[in-house]
Structures are given as C-alpha cells and as structure tokens.
Length: 144
Image (cartoon, rainbow, N blue to C red; front, side):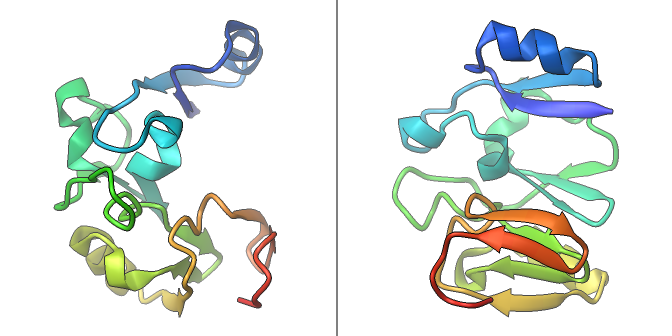
C-alpha cells in the first residue's frame, strides 16, 4: 500500500505509519497558500481506481503511483483556484463544488457514471470523513 503524506509530518508519525506501507511525501508547493501547500488531498484525488494528480506535481514525478494520470488544470493560490482536486467520494457519490473541478476529474466521474452532489464547500474532501460507502461525518451545517 502507498501512503501519500505531507512531507512536513513529524518523524515520529512517519516512523509509525511506515510499517503500513510505502510512504510518498508531497513537498510543499508555493502555488497554493502555505497551510495547505503539502496536503495530498489538495493536489491529488482518487475516483474509484483512478488517481488524478495536479500538474503542479509534475516536477516531483509522482507518476509511479499506480493507475494515475495528471489533471489538466494547475492549482493557484487564490480560492477557488486551489480546490480543483479536493473531491470526496462516498460510494457512488462524489461531493464537491463542481464549478471549480478539473476537467479530467469531471471526465473520470462521468466515465464511472457517479452521482455528483453539488455543495458550496470547496474544500469538500477536507471537511468530510468517509466511514463507509453509505455514510460520512462532516462538520458542515448543511445536509449533503
């Protein structure tokens, strides 16, 4: 199993999770604001078995991640230009503000015929914890 992490994770945690799989570190990118600059869920999304990487990661060559391809749109500092890959999948549903989703991600969602749930929360993957194919936890006040 491959574990994609922010390279700024503490060494203690890295040593702990290393026993569960190969660690792949995301180095901070100044293309987005500092607090999220190394967050994997900002630069990478997984739709079913397909992994889509932001082109901002090209120079670091993460293509060794199984079944992945690069998206079309680069992330930028200013919201909502930093949320194009922050999609949450829950079973056959995908949750995001689709006005700002990368086109390659939309194509993949359509290819798998997934149900798109439009929300106003741009950081949808950051604000949802998936607990099964039919359930999630979120702190957002509105219902999905």
